[in-house]
Length: 244
Image (cartoon, rainbow, N blue to C red; front, side):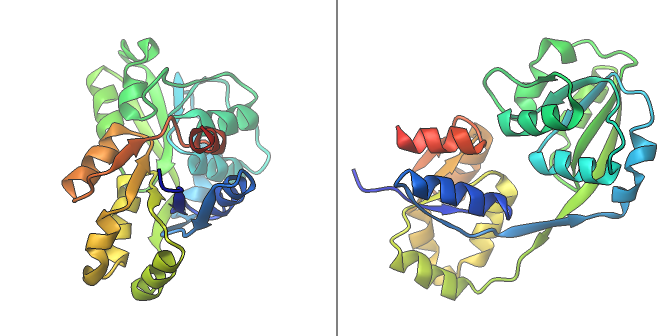
């Protein structure tokens, strides 16, 4: 089997941190964030939004926790039933709130959250979702259908990083990259957009490593044949996966 040589496309500084951890284990990886995050106009509303009562507060990404915590600026998080999409988000949310945080047992995405027994009967329950601007509406729509009153707090948004696709392709090919870690369909779409048309065949020859079936199925629809599902997106889970 060929040596794994990875492209890490996560947001900075997460991409750099994961790359360093992989390299320390002898796993070749380079960091190339494709999107950046920045504050939104909602950022300054954290104290007002979280002053309300919520039966459940759900964080869908580590960035959602980080930006909310920054916006609270030392104000205590409210008492609530906290849920997170995955282990990385759970760790950050537990640290920020000092409270227990529930995550799905297996499927670390919206579908996994929706399978939790706690979210089955939600008549007149108030739920706050912490997330970035945009993204899927499945979680909100399903919770609403189950009787919940759902609100968003969106303290950050994703923005495109201007990159030279031809320069990147030359570097990636020179370093013999043969796999890419992709944490969202948005990042997969951005990767396709960055790479010149002349190099799309090479791009689709890479192995896509992603944390959910939804992402790998989309990768297949867009032309990838070699896709692998990661056990999660925490640094520890990814490093352990490639160590094995």
